[in-house]
Image 1: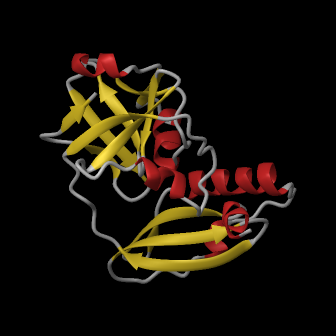
Image 2 (image 1 turned 90 degrees about the vertical axis):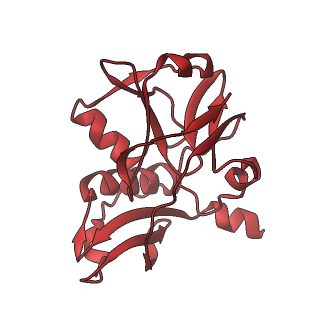
Length: 196
């Protein structure tokens, strides 16, 4: 019963810095898409109406919702330094940003900073971010991510990212690896090791 209740909630993580709210257009799109597809609501809400951000500092704004916004919280943010990654195979379904992340936590590897999830033979995401690889010409991001992140969506719309089916065997052909999410934006990882 508790698990079913947790599954019924979604959340958005929004970057707030010195009172400025980032990437709101894409958060609103995903927020309203989730409300429509999972909770069958036809109304459109604007998240800015629920956000009263701290005016000084960098915060992670967490908005929990189903048909309506249930809560808004602000947490001081400091990015993690991730250097070791392991490719892990799974048939996980995380199409929506559920508050219940236990399925992702179960995949975590204690000997590595982060995992890269392989599904149906193709790379998807890490447990906290979308990914991209640089092939010397373009930045490529998986065609089928676990979750359609808001930073990823914006960079695709802007033409910066190209969609590609990426296999773990291809990793050796790329010169750079990047993580992206609402809080870190697009971050090229330096001195990383990826075990396939």
